Structure formats: C-alpha cells, structure tokens
Image (spheres, helix red, strand yellow):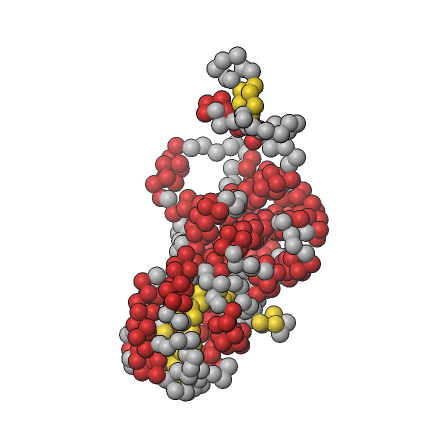
Length: 475
Ligand code: NBP
C-alpha cells in the first residue's frame, strides 16, 4: 500500500482532482469503471506526479494506505451508489469514503448513516470551481464526522483554493451539511447569473452595443462587484462567432439549461418555510426561457407598452444598473444564507455561516469581493439576516435609488427583470412595518374560519361572517 488518497471516477472532475492531489505531492491511486479513462490519464499525465493506476476495485483498495481515503467523482446518484457497493467488500473499519459529486443532501444523509453502521466514515463534499477549479484549487465544503475530518480534512485543505493563504475548505458539519451548503451555493449562483443577464438585457434595450456592455462589466469588476462571474461575462460578451461574425451571445439560443441544484434549493426552502423569492425567480426565469410553446404563444398574442427604453443619460443608467446588480446580489446572498442557517437548525448541523462565506471567497463559481465583507459581518456577531449587518444595510440604502429606477424603467419599457424586481420586493417586504397579510387573514377567516390574531389583545379570534359579524375569542 503506497497511495495516500484514491480517486474513483476519472471523467473531467475526477481526472483533474487526481492531478491536483499529485501536483501537491500526494501519491494517488486511480480507478475508473471503464479502464480507458485510467489509461488516458496515465498516458497524458502519468509522469506529472505519483499515480498508482488500478484495473480492479480490489487492486485499487489494496494500493491505499490505511485508513483508506477514497474520493468518488462519479455521476451523482446511481453512479455513487454503484461505486460504494463495489468498494464495500474490500473496505475496513475506519476507512473514509468521500462523495465529491453533486449529490442531494438527503441522499448523503442516508449514505452516511448506512456507512457509519458499517464502521466507515462517509463524507458528502461539495466541490465548486468546475474543471479548472478541480485542477488548480476548488472551494470545498465537507460534511461528515469530525473524527473522519481529522483524517481527510488536511488533504482537502491542501488541494483547495487559497484566499490570501487561507484554504477555501473547512469542516461544515455532520452528514449532509456539506452537500446542503453546496446546493445553496448553486442556488445563489443561479441568482447571480440571472442578475447579470438582466443587467445585460436592460443595457441592450437602452441601445448599448455588446462592446459597450462588455466594457461596463469590465469596469464594474474593478469595484464592489468584483467577482468571477462578472469577470467572465466580459469574456463571453467579447467572443465573436467565427461563422457569422456576430457576437457569439447573439447566436446562442436563448434557452437556459439546468441540472437540478437550483430547483433543489427552492424545493428545500419551500419545505423549511424560508423565503428565497429571488433565487426561485432565477430558477423560474430559466424555465420560462426554455418553455418554447409558452413563449411562442406569448409572442403571437401579447402586446407590450408603447414606451421604449430611452435613458436621458447613458452613464447614469450604467451606474443605476450597477447598483441594481449589487443590491440584488446582496439580497440573494441574504436569502441563501438564511436557508443555510435554518437548515442548520433543522438538522442540528451547527453550521458557522462566517466559515461558509470564508471558503467561498476563492475557488468557487460565486467567488466575489462581497464575500469577505459577509464573512467579517457574520464573524462579528450572530445575525438574524445578512441585511441586518450595518455595512450591508447602509450599502442597500445607498443603492436603492438606482435599483428602483432600473426596475421601474425596465417595467415601463416592457423589459423583464424578474430577479431585480423580486429582490426589491423582498427588501421592501422585510423592512415594512405592516404587510397586507392582515387582509389575507381576514379573507381566510371569512371563507374557512381559519381565525386570526389581533395587534392589541392576545388570543385567537373569529368573526361570525355569515351571522351577525360579531367577534368571538377562541377558547
Ligand atoms: P460525470 O458526472 O459525467 O460522470 C462520469 C463518471 O461517472 C465516469 O467516471 C463514469 O464512469 C462514472 N460512472 C457512471 Br456515469 N456510472 C457509474 C457507475 N454505475 N459505476 C461507476 N462509475 C460510474 O463526470 P464529471 O462531470 O466529472 O462529474 C463528476 C461529479 O462531479 C458529478 O457528480 C458532478 O455532478 C460533480 N461536479 C461536476 C462539476 C463540473 O463542472 N463538471 C462541478 C462540480 C461537481 P465510466 O467512465 O465508466 O462511464
């Protein structure tokens, strides 16, 4: 046994993670169901570091030092279960199995329980950063036993991205906590991308060409909006299509795909009763974009306003859109972190939100300058919501004028801004002294005797709507 870590599944992610371990001086055992992938990796990179390729699961397991540390990078779901089953006959007490795929955290909870019963440590680990991150340093969100983390944590921290020297990998919590946090990360990622798309659309509707829009993003990336997604937006916008000579973005079909983590985030938020309105709008915006029949019917039968988007001053509009982007982004983070906080309480995970923000500062897709501010605000004290942090509420107060103008002007001109608009509504809802929910309670009591509470007297009340309309206090 010579290898310190083993990787099962050598498609893009597993291959690059294995290379990352090797680049950090670790001896890496390799196994893939289809032998050709192992051979390809050895042929292309076998001499870059110490690899121990295996042709069978048995050989793979035998090549690992104990306790064995095995990272699964296979297709989430059936691939993970099949890989675990194939390993089980050869594993021994104390061995550690890490699922680095995009598993649903509920599945991770079940797998962790099953493997724990067999004396094994199972880790559900969120890994973000795509192929490039897997090779050069991803953000890593591990969930599992603290005891197991002592064995696997240092290795993961070693290959993770670094933010000013600090690893973007930290123990998140037991069983499904890591995959839960990765799921919410992806939900926030959906929102981030929706805002970017809306910013582009508003500027385009106002008459800016693709070059000017790309320049705006490049400029924004030097300030508060500094982030990976804003940075690559300029690169995507600058890409010219070789066959037509047009901007590539103008020839890409406008139907956004999704793999499921955004949907899981929203489903989970609905179950836990956490309002993630803006993240949900971002998931639905992708659904609308891909709904060809609905859009064809809408295009054929619905008229827009007479008004077009004609800003008085382009520089002011660009600044307003920047404010809308920043403020909306803050709202999406607030919603996502609220979901993490609630999930943590629900499942008894004890997740430290400051640590989550800390490991998102580099390596992952949503890495952004804002995360350092979020980290320091949460580190300073337990917040009921990110929006309560002084530097955040002040930033939103300053941004709101431009933010509201963008939503209002876009709406008047018939440009859809579901993300920006939902974010403003969330902001106004949570700061409102009174919401019209009182009327909803009245209606519910009217048709279903669902009762209501009063602002002035304790207790539960019902009005005799179909009788003399007197009020009774429930016993
Ligand atoms: P894929 O998700 O495309 O999975 C391909 C790998 O799974 C191959 O090694 C394949 O083996 C193996 N596999 C399958 Br499919 N079914 C299997 C089974 N029943 N038993 C054993 N192995 C099986 O690879 P990927 O894109 O590298 O992603 C790996 C994981 O990382 C996924 O969970 C993904 O969601 C997650 N992830 C991906 C990214 C990304 O940017 N791509 C980012 C973050 C996380 P074979 O070669 O024999 O077919």
